[in-house]
Image (tube, rainbow, N blue to C red):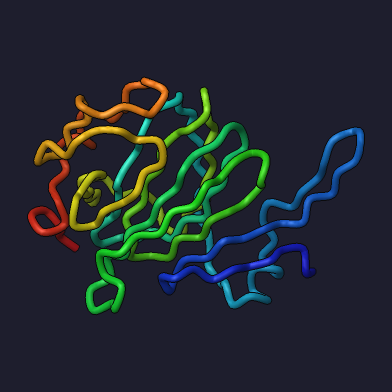
Length: 200
């Protein structure tokens, strides 16, 4: 017990989790999830699936959400570094449309819990990144929604991203400060803005 520190974020329903890392000259050991420790902090989520992805520098995934079968997500990075973002999509929330972002890396071991009702995305800042996350509901085909990653009304400040808003989620005019082109899927470049495309 007591192996984690939990920090609340400016948006209710988002939590930064710092696990205790036991390290020496041989390497380190860390508990990446302990149900009892989470419950001590009032986090009583039930996870049904673990996912893992690998992405190269400049890849931006998001902003994604499930419309009916909403998912809570506990996310972390086991190799590399990403900037991870959540956007509040809860109807009636005082922070609807607001965002919060944090750097997750293999070095800081930080985890980010995103409650149900948020859109989620991340940008890879290192040459490669492996991203792991636990979810509270299964993915349901046909239930996926998305928002433009560069929606000016949301105003996410993606680190190192350079470019001018073209009026859509098209990423062709964007790059990182070192010249790496921003790399989004075709689907993620077609999402609408919060005003024009949000359904929940």
